[in-house]
Amino acid sequence: MSQVIISSATRLPAEKFWQESALGQSLRRLSFDDRLRASVAFENTQGLPTIYNRLIQEAPAGSLLVFVHDDVWLEDFFFPQRIAEGLQVFDAIGVAGNRRRVRNQPAWCFVNDRFIWDERSHLSGSVAHGAAPFGPVTCFGPAPAECELLDGVLLAAKRDVLVENGVTFDERFSFHFYDLDFCRSLRAKELRLGTWPIALTHQSGGSFGSPAWRAGREAYLRKWEAIVPS
Image (cartoon, rainbow, N blue to C red; front, side, top):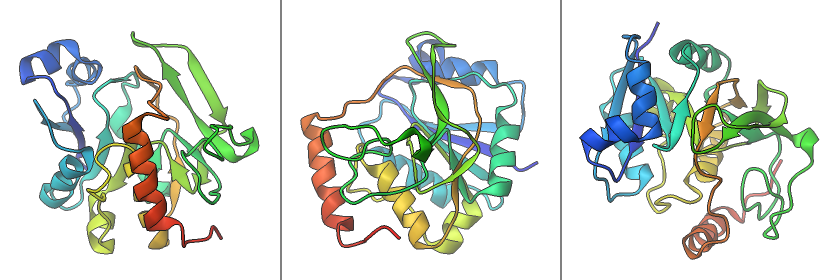
């Protein structure tokens, strides 16, 4: 099986990341699997797209790339296998997403800036939330499912597919909206996105509506507002 490389960024120094962060502790638990490698930016002050693009440029041909937040507990000890299986079906995968896209959509799960949830029939995937591992699970809808948008908590793609199609993360989106933009860039190349069942717990519920989020939304809408969903 191809090597699976996990890319993440953290404000923590290396020692604290491995000892204290959800992702660091998870990777230590998964260290028995030599198919898995970590590429972590410690004491990071750059936007996630900058870190993720660095991996796309440097990763060896044939590798599978996983882009994940540092506050995520990876609970599936078949994790590399899940990634490989998902990327045999789709060009990029995530753990939660939306089967459709609507104009001025502020997040993969909402249909307007009042944070009204989309109908369950359009949503897919499951994510647990909580400070500790194995938190309460929110099931958004059946997975696997082909989607238009994926949640950026975890995204995975084949390195070769990204390079051959010239798809990278737009570095104008330092954190908010980089995931929606990445999905739009993939779909613009007619690549297939989908959810895949992978057990994880996310420590954060998001920061929708913050000043940084609103600035990201304005930039995202300026870039994509002329594109009408098919």
